[in-house]
Length: 607
Image (cartoon, rainbow, N blue to C red):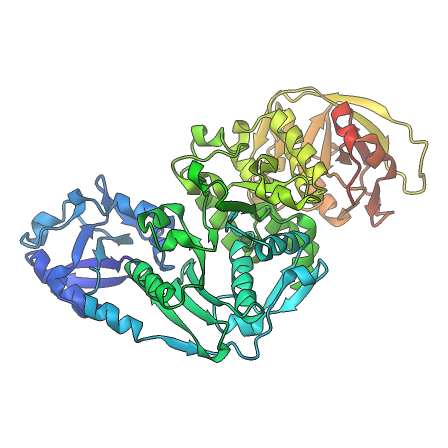
């Protein structure tokens, strides 16, 4: 008896089928039909082996995790190939070209398109909703940093119950309201493009009294079509959990019935629109889930509009609203960078999503991470590289790709890329962060610049002073020069950190961890026989946990010379630097230093 784990592509739940080895593939189809909601003929099901080479698809793989969210990632087509298609006349002894094992997915089931009669039934299966009593939300009418109640909208479509208005949301909504062309909201994943499109659709229907057809591809939840009847708010409706093939005919039907209807599309790839030339390409507004490449004949017809990534200052306001402490916010930001979606996930979820983004990144792709160019896989680049504006004072810049800036703003991503990111890239990142006043990005760039200097065996010149909370100026600085001969990137949790310190190799002079889990310090340098616990920061103030320093100090050999040192980018910050608490219990020497490099004189702490 064989136990085969099966998965219907587009569904969310795997299931097992127990079958004898002598059974035919046709017989397996009958058994699968009994296990699913499929109402058609079993013989019409297409079965594919979940094999690549001779390896079954592992149940713990990121691809299976995405399948179990109801997604149909592009990678699944690597398995849905003719060589994997199972012949209904074959016995399983022949059809299973590799022995099935445990913790594996074995059979991918593709359900054929339904008949025309079933499609007709879908058109009669509308869920009617009323927009009466729902207030049109116009972010452009609010001041920045305000929370808006959006509970009523969340009852109609997938949307949070409250919405945070940041300055960039106000700007983009102004562009949506003033549009005279088709408009495409572009930007990094998870920055709020979909939310702005939904708010615009409801605003246009309720405030503008227009017919709006909102078609959404909600990640992990499926396809939805919502007709917002601005003329009769009580006569709106929606279709839920649609199939790809149903969209274009239904859109065409309702656009013909209401010629003035605005079509708003959310979460669709440009490739999908091109496959349905005509009706879907006539959208009013589109929030795309990847890059959108304008063709020459789009000039004067289509406007691109950037939704910039989130700054740490805005994400901190979101975090404080959720009552998260500073440590939790910093850990989340380390993985999320400027992605609000990742920031709102659990730390484990954000880390997993960040890891998945690197599955297909190769060296060739990494070279494009600081440019506006893409690769053959949209997923490779845009999940890691993020885009923003250096100057938001001129609203026209939102429509001008030449004014956009592309950076890696996740500390995790920068650490993961390692040697693929040059020293000059980190300096450029610091400068861009200063230009947009994003102190969180500046801090990440500065910290990784310092690590890279040590890793690349570059000479680091520091100006050092003793920490004195009572002295506001007139500090005396000494010069210390450091060039690492051997560095180590190791450790993901406290136990691993302590093991590194307890077994510190005699030739090791610089260590930094693989994860953002250390308190109070970011790395350790051994200079002149002294272990320096380094805190790399762009801020004029920084919290210190003397209890943690005491714990770390005990990991080194007895009688070791140990000191704490905060390292900042320039003298202006260093002169004003204060610890919090200002006068901590002094168990080891406390020092402050700055990098003696004229490049960093352009900015203070930005706080």
